[in-house]
Image (cartoon, rainbow, N blue to C red; front, side, top):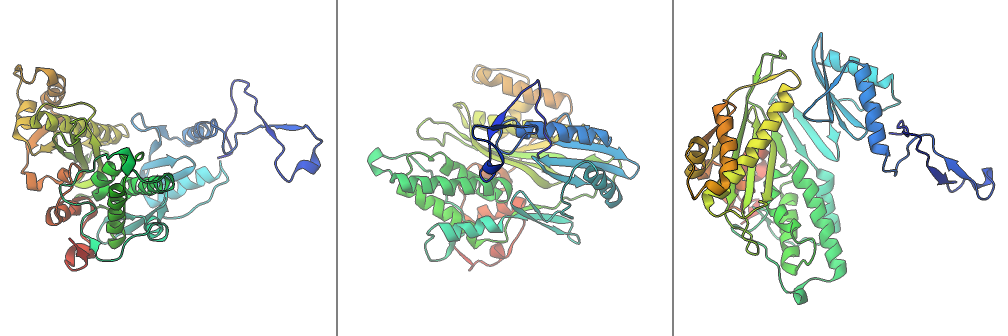
Length: 419
């Protein structure tokens, strides 16, 4: 990380570090020749050096994802993914070993071997099952160590079915120290839901709306999510594709998506919630639960907005795949549980009641006409994106949670958790 260089004649000086004062006279400052930790230039400067290193070994940078570099070699595709100065290389073993040595020749870096931990996540690979599970046991332990979780049975779901958090009076808000503690807890949950616990997306999204002005009800809801996660320690993002890539560029990857919405859920601004899930060969690779940025005037319109957001993520995944020289099967399938939204995506007529949203309609219609995405209807109980739009009851919650987390012992043992 300390290989970054300053550009355009930029000069930055620093005070003499503590402990080195005896080597310099009073009033001296030091001119930096390289970027250091803490400078706003450092990450970008290092990234540019990293790109130069990748280019020198024959890798190209993806035009879809700036943190992905790739190269087609005699032994197949090699991909490098960077997270600041943590790099992950993927490919056949022979190609990976060669690529790692090339990078070690350019940087003084540590070779951590096969991927078992990354960015605070534990990565468990089951070779026989051909699956990967991502968990965060250290973060789970911090919930028990740092927060006063009440005794009793672990809740079966992260939030009460149908529950919606609302703001209260200023007089009912918790104290400033409690507020900071609540912010810390929600911050931890945001990290967990992003990387290992997608089934908690909706409940944590709700909590994040009250980072200021939280009440005791919000703290109680936060503790419930934490306790649910602690009670299901082996649950995590589960990736199990239904196809095996043969390593050849003419293999067609399957991209699909599901979307759902909860109409006018925000009681203050009457906005709806979008939830969607994107799959690569039936393995969930992208999910979201977010409040829509505009007010929709009907359930169908809200579903159309969620479907459009899902389609955008599907297009991104398609471009990531295709821009490294691979193929995706067309048309990609987008499933929605609202027949009105499906019909709008297949209908070229424009009426007075839909004219105000015809940009979204035309977006999906064009994708259909070009043979890129086909919108299909799916029954509501089979739409796993419902998990990200609303708080569900136990049986339906666990049914949809299996889609992105697989099946764990807590789902099999009805007595392990409470209602």
